Amino acid sequence: MARGVTPAVAGVMHLPELGDLRTGLINGTDPDHPEYWQPLGKASSQTGVEMAAIAVAIHDAPQVFLDPLPAKARGRVLEWLSSTVDGSFPPNNWRWFRILCLEAVAKAGHPVDRAVIEREHALLDYYAGSFDQAGEGLMLVHGSISRALAPAFVERLQRVAQDFAQ
Image (cartoon, rainbow, N blue to C red; front, side, top):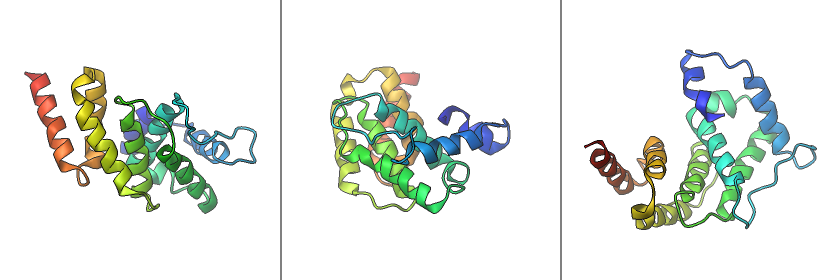
């Protein structure tokens, strides 16, 4: 979902399936719908990865993916993304997925426990030496999401990128 967000919003690429994606968000977060997605559970799963992709789309293009939804559906989508607070993530770069989800939720005006995001940033900083370049790259690509909230973390990521580029 997130791959085509920027080109679509910039008008460079037309995504005719945007309506289908919004319908998927509505149905997937409706517990009464047969296509309902469960909230992220205590067992670490690929679901958290997929949630992050949706969160990036919502964060970067709320006018495309969140604002057009009915109010009740918007609330369900934000609650579903918020379930990452209680979800299980391994102690690696997957912790970034929780940050992405919660930052999208916060940007949409839904309440978020900032302490959770700060804790995740601290853990990512602690484990940073064990990440591969792909993991660091993911954090760099989405670093602007947390720039205002965790400037020291983003500065460290910028140093990593500079070191990598040399």
